[in-house]
Every structure is written in C-alpha cells, then in structure tokens.
Length: 312
Image 1: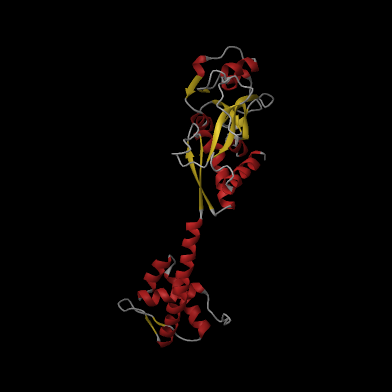
Image 2 (image 1 turned 30 degrees about the vertical axis):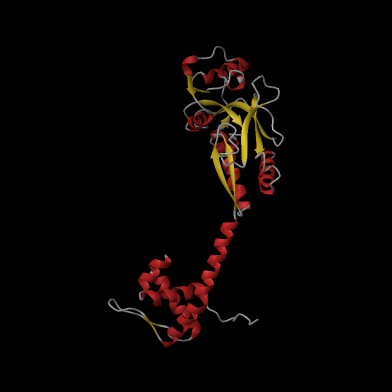
C-alpha cells in the first residue's frame, strides 16, 4: 500500500483554494466557507508559499480569479482525491446515522423537565450511538400503540393508603420523594425564616391527592407550630411545574419535592427553609421497561444509567 505523502498542505488551505477556483472570487469563497475574505487570502498565500509557486491570478473588481497552470494541476488533484474523500466520509456518516438506535422514554411533565431531562442529555453525550426521545405521559403508556420503550411512572409507596396500580416485574425503584419548604433566595433569607414570616408571603399550594398530606400547607403549619393556616395567602396551582416556576420567580413559598428540585437547589435558584424539618413523600418514581423488550441491552443500559444517577 502506498504511503501517504508528508507534503500534503493543510486541508483548510486546500478547501479555500478549491472554493476560489470554483467560484472565481475570494469574496464568494469566504461567504461559502463562513470566514472572512482576508482569511481566504491568507490561506492562499500560505499555500503558495508552502508549494513555492503561484496558484491563482487574483481577479479585480470586474474579473474572475483564475488558476495558473500550477493551480490547474492542483485543482485536478483535489477534484480526483479530496472530493471523493469527502463523499466517502459522508457515506460513512450516513450509514452510522442509520445504525443509530432510537430509544423513546416517557415520564410526567414535572419529572421530565426538572429531573430527567438533564440526565438524558448526559446519557446522550456518553452514548452518541443512542438517540433518546423524551415524551410526556402522565400515566402508563399504551405499550402497543404509543411506541414507548421505557416509562418512568409516579406510583404510590407500598406503605401509602392511596390506591396502587398492579406492580410490574420489570419495575425498579428510581427515586422517592422528600418534601420541605423552599423559596427563591431573593424572597427570604432561610437563616431568618420563622413560621410567622411564612404568613407574610404567598403560599403556593399544589393540587394533590387527599392522602398526600405532606404537600399540604395545613400539615406544615401544624408541624412548624405556625398557628392557623392563612387561607387568604394560598395560591392554588394544578401541578408541580408551575409551582416551582413561581417559586423560582420569587412569587411565593412552595413545598418542594426532592429530588425533582435538586438541580434548582444546587444552582441557587431555590433555598431550603427550616432544614431541620422534612416529610417523606407518599409517592415514588419507578422505571418500567417495555413488557416485550425487558431483556433488550439498550433498554437495560439506559435503566442502569438512570439508577446510577438516582444513587448519586
């Protein structure tokens, strides 16, 4: 097999020369390659200096740039070698994209946006051969019709009195919820927070199952000894995502559910109030594989990765 020459000029210079020769203009070549005209000119001069010959007759304002005889020889070599090389690389890239496995994961909206999405991005970075599609489903998907590979479901804990769905053999416990008050650091200094200072702010109340007393402000006022709950301070919102959005915006105090808010706590968007107090959640998130593909290595790889992230 012939040895690759050590005298091949840098590829950017060859690309600049080819573009000028084909387009007849340094300005057009610069526009196509998304660089400045001076950068193209510099590449051409460097290429001519490296090869020891003039390659291009520069055109004026009204004439085209034209390759010299030496330039024509180089252009022919580029057309017969580098252009086929680029086409071969593109074919290989297309084949790789076609081989890329697609994995579709579902979870409810709060868990998807607050906890799962950052970990999906990390997984995709580590495993570029797997494309992950994240879809929002509040309940278990229709495995036959929804084309879901993995579902992450919010289910009651075994000790809860809430009606529980039938367990599934592939279920693995992912995270359990822990509840405590949180707010924006711009709203309140946690070092000076007292049950009485809560009454000075809007209390963001999530609609919830009657048995989920841990996310009810009535429970927390009783726990903290804050007296009667000021009903006029309650702002009721239908789900957890807008609750946390309002809290981050400094509009009130929320009952945060860890680990869903862990990223916001870590980055200082939220602060924890009364750190000596917390309540276990009535719910947990489980990761469930497609019933007919529970031994699929790609599904198991994703499941293992998420279980590792939940343990960190």
